[in-house]
Length: 70
Image (cartoon, rainbow, N blue to C red; front, side):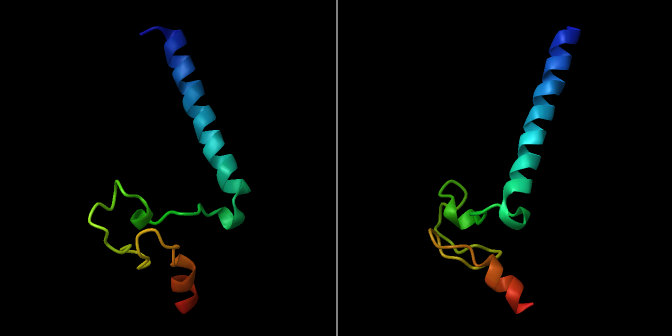
């Protein structure tokens, strides 16, 4: 392989990781919003509730409510 290709690949991966880190730092409490799989029609084809928080498809994530119960 060409050394230039390897260096450019490593640089692009580093830039992507830095972007993800910056997004985590900017987000409130380092949490991403809308992480329930029930909100994604490609992952939840049967229309089931979220297995983690119990949210209905298209509904808000109930993660915060589950954390308050503990």
